[in-house]
Length: 356
View 1 (spheres, helix red, strand yellow):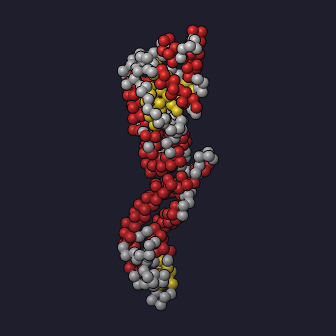
View 2: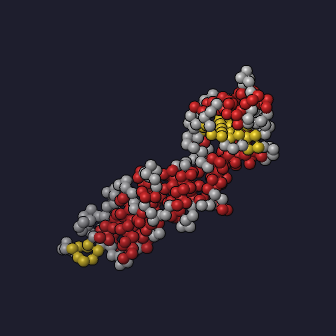
View 3: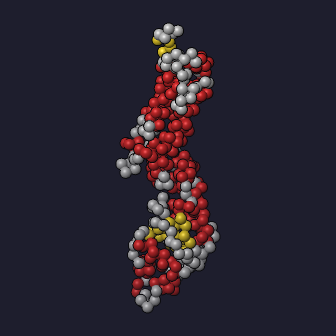
């Protein structure tokens, strides 16, 4: 799957979405200022390799000799790990700290070393970076990703950035729209809303969903069991489908206004079942077509008129001869009631609505 200018999802996330791209810029700025960076992410950083590479590329604009190392994922003691990694064990003496020994050996100079440290390893790496006391890329800098909350104590040599302060729900929505392959704008908006509601800030989850989901497919079948949530899907349908239902209702009212005016005039005769007139969901009398809700529109279409002797006739209060229009009204009413009762609209109904 590719999106803007053929770019893969990870590049789009870190380069074209405002929050993530701002995090890349801020990280690079901190490194240019001679500070290593500790990035706090509640979950694993999405498209991690792309992020690290984007930061390294930005830093190279001012540090042309910068060497970018492979991502380190280890729970070992940082000093011990790096001494072993650069094959410096033979010359190391325990009377010297690992950080000072590595500085003396100059193996980290002009290097940006990306590190992923989870759990207890995070504190060990932060302590090592502070002990290393680098003040520029020429001395070597670290880009550390940890899970959990940011450390409270400030550090002279380590700048802490919180992923959550940069990436918002808006970024997820924008991203889902950018990578969507659906040319139907209405369908694309719905898929985007569903993706953001279910995956939140999980950009990799959004990318996988948007790239593979067929809108005619049931979400219960399209998502892993631990990801599917009826409430999250319902929330997306409230946001995206409910306004469409209202707009489509207004379109129908506008198209059939003359007949609806005449039907409302009939309800003013106060014959059964309109003894109090046509009432809306709040119990107020509907006087004009503009006040109609989909439920009242359906009631007018399905209620028989009565003559002056209160006998039911074959004629409906609102006669609409177009079968397709009548089906649209029933669809809108059914979907409106489904959502109002905190239930999920079926995939087939969603497709019919979005393509109406």
